[in-house]
Length: 444
Image 1 (cartoon, helix red, strand yellow):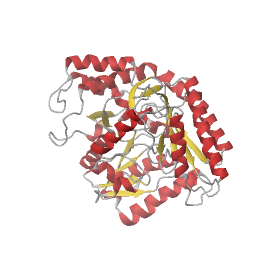
Image 2 (tube, rainbow, N blue to C red):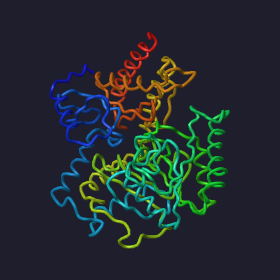
Image 3 (cartoon, rainbow, N blue to C red):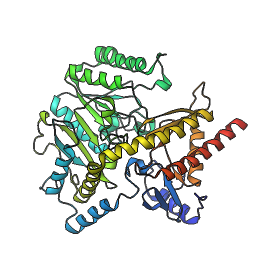
Image 4 (cartoon, one colour):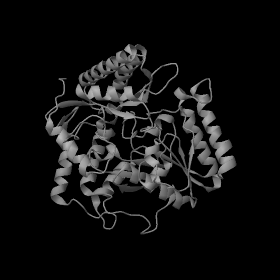
């Protein structure tokens, strides 16, 4: 990749943005997106970037979606864009929901369509309370479920997400296992995970909140914004046991980890566990706003008027989602093999980074949902926040799009369909940036 060159065009546009738009979560580097295709994105200056972000895990199957996804959306635009699906009826969303349910375990039979991950989780909150007639929700430390008030109550990744927005409704946060930063001095990841389970059962549920009042446990199979933390299988198995013993609904937030990102359609399947409700978004719409909440049929239905929205089941978004789902169903075995093969390439390169550079403390993830955690010192594990920013910025100026996660991690989530040549090229850029920042640290 050639060195990125920026002019006044980019910085003037960013200045206009800052002047008029509410501040959100802009990255440190000045990327102004213009177009994309497959493995690559271009900015307004015509600079070409390799994409290791999938635009926040939305473009799982290529930047700007496939030709089939775009055609499906364009064809639907000429027919009818908005059908007020949650008030009127339309065939396309029903057909999509029927098709989606074939990807789920037996017994799942109810779908609610929305516009985003936070909406999908809000829907799950309401369903869990409706179905159980209970009020409390269990989330986990370091979790991210969204920024609207209900899902934000479950979120516990960064103080800035929650400050000045509370109080939050009836949410309890339990410990999520992160063996790399073990506070229990456990001998192995399973022992650490069981200590977290003990905290939930023997402290929270025994002394603070009765399990008879807990409606649901919300969990990310892999914590996303929290730093791509992967728990041991035993942790999910124990959550399933606790939910079953206490008639609590187990909700799997698949918004970032689902849709083949880990090599399986449902990320929770990596743990041999079936949840009661699943939430999805990001990749489900193939690039258009889309969320889905999928529940077991046995829970029953919702009363008319108790929950709805204007744009859920938007026909253009559903058309794109249908094309994406058709691609997955036709190519599922090939996609699974592709993820395994590319995971081996990615893990080899990431492990080399950890072995060769003091600044890389941990490597983790599943499938093509991977991350490195940056530390100032491998012994103390002090977070290398400034160094993380420098690596992400330097990679940008060398033509690679990356996103941070957690306190000092960098997520590695290229499109699943990325070519192996482009994958290696991206890692060459990343390693160059890590090497540069690591050397600067050593010199100091």
